[in-house]
Amino acid sequence: MEFSLYSKALAIVPKCSGLLSFIGSISIIQDVIKDKEKRSASVFHRIMLGLSLFDAMASVVNILSTWPTPANLSESVFLASGTTVTCTLQGFFNELGNITTIIYTTSLCLRYLLFVKYGWKERDFQKHELMFHVLPIATGLAMAIVGLPLQLYNNAGYLCWYAPAPKNCEEFGTCSRGRLMSSFRWIHYGIVWSAIVLVTLGMILLYTTVRKQEVSTTTLGTNQRKMSKAVAAQAAWYIFALYITWLFTTITRVYSTVYEKTNKTSLMLMALFFPLQGFWNAFIYYRPQLIRNRNREGVRTQQNSNTKVSLRNINAQSSIKISKIAVNQK
Image 1: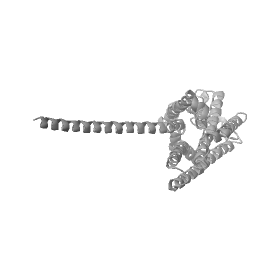
Image 2 (image 1 turned 180 degrees about the vertical axis):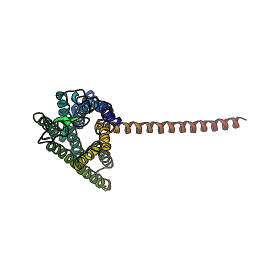
Image 3 (image 1 turned 45 degrees about the horizontal axis):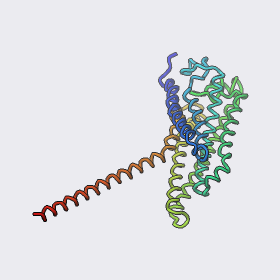
Image 4 (image 1 turned 30 degrees about the vertical axis):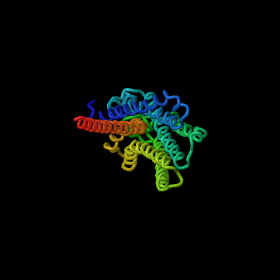
Protein backbone atom coordinates (compact mmCIF):
# COMPACT_ATOMS: atom_id res chain seq x y z
CA MET A 1 0.00 0.00 0.00
CA GLU A 2 1.22 3.51 -0.81
CA PHE A 3 1.27 5.67 2.32
CA SER A 4 0.83 9.43 2.31
CA LEU A 5 3.68 11.74 3.29
CA TYR A 6 1.73 12.61 6.45
CA SER A 7 1.45 8.94 7.49
CA LYS A 8 5.16 8.42 6.98
CA ALA A 9 6.05 11.59 8.87
CA LEU A 10 3.76 10.61 11.75
CA ALA A 11 5.71 7.38 12.17
CA ILE A 12 9.19 8.89 11.71
CA VAL A 13 8.99 12.24 13.55
CA PRO A 14 8.58 10.72 17.06
CA LYS A 15 11.61 8.51 16.41
CA CYS A 16 13.75 11.63 15.94
CA SER A 17 12.24 13.50 18.90
CA GLY A 18 12.42 10.38 21.05
CA LEU A 19 16.10 9.91 20.21
CA LEU A 20 16.91 13.48 21.28
CA SER A 21 14.98 12.93 24.52
CA PHE A 22 16.72 9.60 25.15
CA ILE A 23 20.15 11.19 24.71
CA GLY A 24 19.18 14.00 27.09
CA SER A 25 17.87 11.62 29.75
CA ILE A 26 20.88 9.31 29.49
CA SER A 27 23.25 12.28 29.87
CA ILE A 28 21.53 13.24 33.15
CA ILE A 29 21.57 9.62 34.36
CA GLN A 30 25.30 9.20 33.73
CA ASP A 31 26.08 12.59 35.27
CA VAL A 32 24.35 11.60 38.53
CA ILE A 33 25.62 8.02 38.65
CA LYS A 34 29.29 8.84 38.02
CA ASP A 35 29.36 11.53 40.75
CA LYS A 36 29.32 9.96 44.23
CA GLU A 37 28.28 13.18 45.96
CA LYS A 38 25.31 13.75 43.64
CA ARG A 39 24.33 10.10 43.84
CA SER A 40 24.53 9.66 47.60
CA ALA A 41 24.09 13.11 49.18
CA SER A 42 21.68 15.06 46.98
CA VAL A 43 17.93 14.40 47.00
CA PHE A 44 17.53 16.75 44.03
CA HIS A 45 19.87 14.65 41.92
CA ARG A 46 18.15 11.41 42.95
CA ILE A 47 14.80 12.91 41.91
CA MET A 48 16.39 13.85 38.58
CA LEU A 49 17.75 10.31 38.31
CA GLY A 50 14.30 8.79 38.79
CA LEU A 51 12.70 11.31 36.43
CA SER A 52 15.32 10.65 33.75
CA LEU A 53 15.13 6.86 34.06
CA PHE A 54 11.40 6.84 33.36
CA ASP A 55 11.69 9.52 30.69
CA ALA A 56 14.34 7.38 28.96
CA MET A 57 11.80 4.55 29.02
CA ALA A 58 9.14 6.76 27.45
CA SER A 59 11.70 7.96 24.89
CA VAL A 60 12.39 4.38 23.76
CA VAL A 61 8.64 3.91 23.33
CA ASN A 62 8.58 6.92 21.00
CA ILE A 63 11.68 5.78 19.12
CA LEU A 64 9.87 2.51 18.36
CA SER A 65 6.73 4.47 17.33
CA THR A 66 4.71 2.25 14.95
CA TRP A 67 7.07 -0.74 14.86
CA PRO A 68 5.37 -2.68 17.71
CA THR A 69 1.91 -2.22 16.12
CA PRO A 70 0.56 -5.59 14.87
CA ALA A 71 1.67 -6.36 11.33
CA ASN A 72 -1.92 -7.11 10.30
CA LEU A 73 -2.43 -3.33 10.44
CA SER A 74 0.49 -2.68 8.09
CA GLU A 75 -1.88 -1.60 5.34
CA SER A 76 -3.14 1.30 7.46
CA VAL A 77 -0.17 2.02 9.78
CA PHE A 78 3.20 2.84 8.25
CA LEU A 79 6.05 0.53 9.45
CA ALA A 80 3.70 -1.63 11.55
CA SER A 81 5.56 -4.91 12.02
CA GLY A 82 4.78 -6.23 15.50
CA THR A 83 2.22 -8.41 17.24
CA THR A 84 -0.44 -7.99 19.88
CA VAL A 85 2.22 -8.86 22.47
CA THR A 86 4.68 -6.19 21.28
CA CYS A 87 1.88 -3.62 21.11
CA THR A 88 0.82 -4.52 24.65
CA LEU A 89 4.38 -4.15 25.91
CA GLN A 90 4.75 -0.78 24.22
CA GLY A 91 1.46 0.40 25.68
CA PHE A 92 2.49 -0.77 29.15
CA PHE A 93 5.82 1.08 29.12
CA ASN A 94 4.22 4.06 27.41
CA GLU A 95 1.76 4.50 30.28
CA LEU A 96 4.34 3.69 32.97
CA GLY A 97 6.91 6.12 31.58
CA ASN A 98 4.57 9.02 30.95
CA ILE A 99 2.56 8.96 34.17
CA THR A 100 5.65 8.42 36.33
CA THR A 101 7.54 11.21 34.55
CA ILE A 102 4.89 13.87 35.04
CA ILE A 103 4.43 13.04 38.73
CA TYR A 104 8.21 13.07 39.19
CA THR A 105 8.16 16.58 37.68
CA THR A 106 5.55 17.48 40.31
CA SER A 107 7.89 16.08 42.98
CA LEU A 108 10.67 18.24 41.56
CA CYS A 109 8.48 21.35 41.75
CA LEU A 110 7.52 20.47 45.34
CA ARG A 111 11.19 20.17 46.21
CA TYR A 112 11.87 23.68 44.87
CA LEU A 113 8.87 25.08 46.72
CA LEU A 114 9.90 23.54 50.03
CA PHE A 115 13.42 24.89 49.61
CA VAL A 116 12.48 28.48 48.71
CA LYS A 117 9.25 29.10 50.62
CA TYR A 118 9.66 26.89 53.67
CA GLY A 119 13.44 26.88 53.99
CA TRP A 120 13.95 23.12 53.93
CA LYS A 121 17.55 21.95 54.23
CA GLU A 122 19.09 18.88 52.66
CA ARG A 123 18.56 16.88 55.86
CA ASP A 124 14.82 17.67 55.71
CA PHE A 125 14.61 16.39 52.15
CA GLN A 126 16.52 13.24 53.07
CA LYS A 127 14.15 12.60 55.96
CA HIS A 128 11.10 12.73 53.66
CA GLU A 129 12.74 11.57 50.43
CA LEU A 130 10.62 8.45 50.09
CA MET A 131 7.50 10.47 49.26
CA PHE A 132 9.24 12.05 46.27
CA HIS A 133 9.74 8.59 44.70
CA VAL A 134 6.92 6.35 45.94
CA LEU A 135 4.00 8.39 44.60
CA PRO A 136 5.30 8.69 41.01
CA ILE A 137 6.36 5.06 40.73
CA ALA A 138 3.29 3.60 42.49
CA THR A 139 0.86 5.66 40.39
CA GLY A 140 2.67 4.83 37.16
CA LEU A 141 2.75 1.12 37.94
CA ALA A 142 -0.92 1.07 38.92
CA MET A 143 -2.02 2.78 35.70
CA ALA A 144 0.22 0.58 33.57
CA ILE A 145 -0.63 -2.76 35.19
CA VAL A 146 -4.40 -2.28 35.12
CA GLY A 147 -4.28 -2.08 31.33
CA LEU A 148 -2.95 -5.63 30.99
CA PRO A 149 -5.90 -7.77 32.14
CA LEU A 150 -8.37 -5.31 30.58
CA GLN A 151 -6.57 -5.57 27.21
CA LEU A 152 -6.49 -1.81 26.87
CA TYR A 153 -3.23 -1.58 24.90
CA ASN A 154 -3.82 -1.36 21.17
CA ASN A 155 -2.74 0.87 18.31
CA ALA A 156 -3.67 4.48 19.09
CA GLY A 157 -2.16 6.24 16.07
CA TYR A 158 1.63 6.26 16.05
CA LEU A 159 1.91 4.40 19.38
CA CYS A 160 0.17 1.63 21.26
CA TRP A 161 -1.80 2.93 24.22
CA TYR A 162 -5.35 2.86 25.60
CA ALA A 163 -7.34 2.27 22.40
CA PRO A 164 -10.13 0.08 21.00
CA ALA A 165 -9.49 -2.85 18.68
CA PRO A 166 -10.40 -3.18 15.96
CA LYS A 167 -10.17 0.52 15.14
CA ASN A 168 -13.45 2.50 15.17
CA CYS A 169 -15.38 -0.35 16.81
CA GLU A 170 -18.12 0.35 19.34
CA GLU A 171 -16.45 0.33 22.73
CA PHE A 172 -19.13 -1.73 24.49
CA GLY A 173 -20.36 -3.54 21.39
CA THR A 174 -18.13 -4.73 18.58
CA CYS A 175 -14.74 -4.16 20.23
CA SER A 176 -12.78 -7.29 21.01
CA ARG A 177 -10.16 -5.36 23.03
CA GLY A 178 -10.02 -2.04 24.88
CA ARG A 179 -13.65 -1.92 26.00
CA LEU A 180 -12.90 0.39 28.94
CA MET A 181 -10.30 2.49 27.17
CA SER A 182 -12.33 5.74 27.29
CA SER A 183 -12.69 5.56 31.06
CA PHE A 184 -9.00 4.98 31.59
CA ARG A 185 -8.07 7.73 29.15
CA TRP A 186 -10.06 10.13 31.33
CA ILE A 187 -8.34 8.80 34.46
CA HIS A 188 -4.99 9.21 32.73
CA TYR A 189 -5.65 12.81 31.74
CA GLY A 190 -7.20 13.51 35.12
CA ILE A 191 -3.84 12.61 36.67
CA VAL A 192 -1.91 14.59 34.06
CA TRP A 193 -4.02 17.74 34.32
CA SER A 194 -4.11 17.54 38.13
CA ALA A 195 -0.31 17.40 38.14
CA ILE A 196 -0.12 20.39 35.79
CA VAL A 197 -2.51 22.38 38.02
CA LEU A 198 -0.48 21.51 41.13
CA VAL A 199 2.77 22.46 39.41
CA THR A 200 1.24 25.76 38.27
CA LEU A 201 0.03 26.58 41.79
CA GLY A 202 3.47 25.70 43.10
CA MET A 203 5.05 28.05 40.57
CA ILE A 204 2.72 30.87 41.65
CA LEU A 205 3.71 30.32 45.30
CA LEU A 206 7.38 30.30 44.30
CA TYR A 207 6.99 33.54 42.39
CA THR A 208 5.17 35.34 45.19
CA THR A 209 7.72 34.13 47.74
CA VAL A 210 10.66 35.36 45.70
CA ARG A 211 8.94 38.71 45.08
CA LYS A 212 8.45 39.15 48.83
CA GLN A 213 12.09 38.24 49.43
CA GLU A 214 13.26 40.77 46.84
CA VAL A 215 11.59 43.66 48.67
CA SER A 216 12.59 42.39 52.11
CA THR A 217 15.71 43.88 53.66
CA THR A 218 15.65 41.98 56.93
CA THR A 219 14.32 38.44 56.38
CA LEU A 220 17.14 37.18 54.17
CA GLY A 221 20.61 38.29 53.22
CA THR A 222 21.43 39.40 49.69
CA ASN A 223 23.12 36.10 48.79
CA GLN A 224 20.16 34.07 50.06
CA ARG A 225 17.72 36.19 48.05
CA LYS A 226 19.85 35.72 44.95
CA MET A 227 19.91 31.96 45.53
CA SER A 228 16.14 31.81 45.98
CA LYS A 229 15.63 33.78 42.77
CA ALA A 230 17.96 31.47 40.85
CA VAL A 231 16.22 28.38 42.23
CA ALA A 232 12.79 29.75 41.29
CA ALA A 233 14.02 30.51 37.77
CA GLN A 234 15.33 26.97 37.41
CA ALA A 235 11.99 25.56 38.59
CA ALA A 236 10.18 27.76 36.06
CA TRP A 237 12.25 26.26 33.25
CA TYR A 238 11.33 22.71 34.29
CA ILE A 239 7.66 23.71 34.38
CA PHE A 240 7.98 25.25 30.92
CA ALA A 241 9.31 21.90 29.68
CA LEU A 242 6.28 20.21 31.22
CA TYR A 243 3.89 22.63 29.51
CA ILE A 244 5.45 22.33 26.06
CA THR A 245 5.50 18.53 26.41
CA TRP A 246 1.80 18.20 27.22
CA LEU A 247 0.33 21.19 25.37
CA PHE A 248 -0.31 19.58 21.98
CA THR A 249 -1.20 16.25 23.57
CA THR A 250 -3.94 17.98 25.53
CA ILE A 251 -5.16 19.89 22.47
CA THR A 252 -5.27 16.69 20.43
CA ARG A 253 -7.22 14.73 23.02
CA VAL A 254 -9.68 17.54 23.76
CA TYR A 255 -10.31 18.07 20.05
CA SER A 256 -10.87 14.37 19.40
CA THR A 257 -13.27 14.16 22.37
CA VAL A 258 -15.31 17.20 21.33
CA TYR A 259 -15.41 16.61 17.57
CA GLU A 260 -15.01 12.80 17.56
CA LYS A 261 -12.18 13.00 15.04
CA THR A 262 -8.46 13.70 15.11
CA ASN A 263 -6.94 17.02 14.13
CA LYS A 264 -3.98 16.09 11.93
CA THR A 265 -2.03 19.25 12.66
CA SER A 266 -2.20 18.93 16.43
CA LEU A 267 -1.42 15.20 16.19
CA MET A 268 1.74 15.93 14.20
CA LEU A 269 2.78 18.61 16.69
CA MET A 270 2.11 16.12 19.47
CA ALA A 271 4.36 13.58 17.72
CA LEU A 272 7.07 16.24 17.51
CA PHE A 273 6.95 17.83 20.97
CA PHE A 274 5.55 15.13 23.26
CA PRO A 275 8.69 12.92 23.16
CA LEU A 276 11.07 15.84 23.83
CA GLN A 277 10.85 16.21 27.61
CA GLY A 278 14.18 14.48 28.21
CA PHE A 279 15.83 16.85 25.76
CA TRP A 280 14.40 19.92 27.53
CA ASN A 281 15.25 18.47 30.95
CA ALA A 282 18.90 17.98 29.95
CA PHE A 283 19.16 21.54 28.65
CA ILE A 284 17.68 22.89 31.90
CA TYR A 285 19.72 20.51 34.10
CA TYR A 286 23.00 21.75 32.61
CA ARG A 287 21.83 25.39 32.43
CA PRO A 288 23.30 26.46 35.84
CA GLN A 289 26.64 24.91 34.87
CA LEU A 290 26.61 26.75 31.54
CA ILE A 291 25.83 30.02 33.33
CA ARG A 292 28.68 29.45 35.81
CA ASN A 293 31.10 28.65 33.00
CA ARG A 294 30.00 31.77 31.11
CA ASN A 295 30.42 33.92 34.23
CA ARG A 296 33.87 32.45 34.92
CA GLU A 297 34.86 33.11 31.33
CA GLY A 298 33.59 36.67 31.69
CA VAL A 299 35.64 37.12 34.87
CA ARG A 300 38.76 35.71 33.19
CA THR A 301 38.22 37.98 30.18
CA GLN A 302 37.84 40.98 32.48
CA GLN A 303 40.94 39.98 34.45
CA ASN A 304 42.95 39.58 31.25
CA SER A 305 41.68 42.95 30.06
CA ASN A 306 42.64 44.56 33.38
CA THR A 307 46.06 42.90 33.23
CA LYS A 308 46.66 44.24 29.71
CA VAL A 309 45.60 47.72 30.81
CA SER A 310 47.94 47.50 33.80
CA LEU A 311 50.81 46.36 31.60
CA ARG A 312 50.17 49.21 29.18
CA ASN A 313 50.16 51.65 32.08
CA ILE A 314 53.39 50.19 33.44
CA ASN A 315 55.01 50.34 30.00
CA ALA A 316 53.82 53.90 29.55
CA GLN A 317 55.17 54.91 32.94
CA SER A 318 58.47 53.16 32.19
CA SER A 319 58.76 54.97 28.89
CA ILE A 320 58.14 58.30 30.60
CA LYS A 321 60.80 57.53 33.23
CA ILE A 322 63.28 56.48 30.59
CA SER A 323 62.62 59.64 28.63
CA LYS A 324 63.13 61.78 31.74
CA ILE A 325 66.40 59.99 32.49
CA ALA A 326 67.59 60.53 28.92
CA VAL A 327 66.74 64.23 29.12
CA ASN A 328 68.54 64.63 32.42
CA GLN A 329 71.61 62.88 31.06
CA LYS A 330 71.75 65.36 28.19
